[in-house]
Length: 316
Image 1 (cartoon, one colour):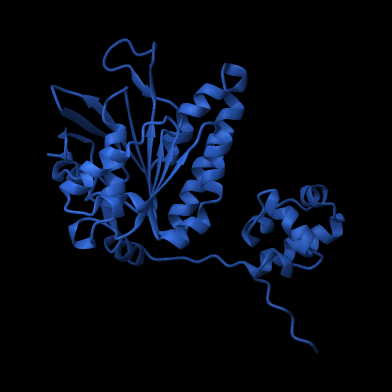
Image 2: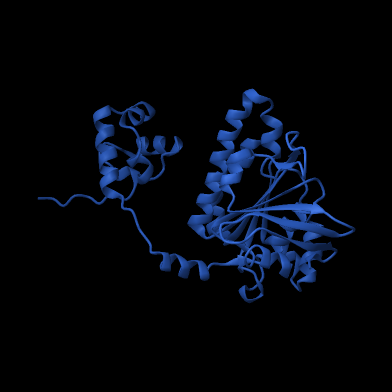
């Protein structure tokens, strides 16, 4: 009796050829795990195969996928060896647990000129530092949605760290996104770039500005949140798959429902609130000082620190 072929790719599933597999990938069903939890009827309609063929494909996908469990001790050991990018400020590093960590989404929100982009650009320099100096010896992907990326600023920051500014700039892949389609595609197609250029940091500055300007009014809110949710979910998948740090900046609005205290509220609602592993709120203080508040973290207590934005970059 012939030995059954091991199922590793979509094409290996019974009744699924190369053309059908491409249709599945185009529809977002690009892994065996996604096929395993799909409805056979939906699968049938989606790619034009019989319900019976779809049932066989789903069953084969279920049988070929396994769930991998890890103990708490194994997860702790992995977390202790995980890379983190220094922010340039010892106070801020301490506040967030040692730096901006890989496999996670770090979000910073704040009003105009609060220093969000300055911190984002500083991280694109710091990620290139040796590990013993708080870097990951990798490159950065910078998705600029507001036209605020400044190579001259990167040069200042690089020189302050004793790095070759030209080399540092060459290690930052910049995409100027002028609509949500370009922003989303930049992330969807990032896999190849990450592998080819050893990308260890993805910056989206800002995450919400284009969504905010394109999806206007309550009628568009549902579609906006759905697209934003898929977009941020893809970022998390890249973080997990390639051990990459994700750093996103976010715009804010004043919440009229808050009568006492600071009414500043980040855009994106619960979608971003749940997606971000670490949330920071930045606000201006006197002169070059900025106050950074840790709003949410799974392992660090809430707190605040003061940083300075100087010609040389982010410092204490």
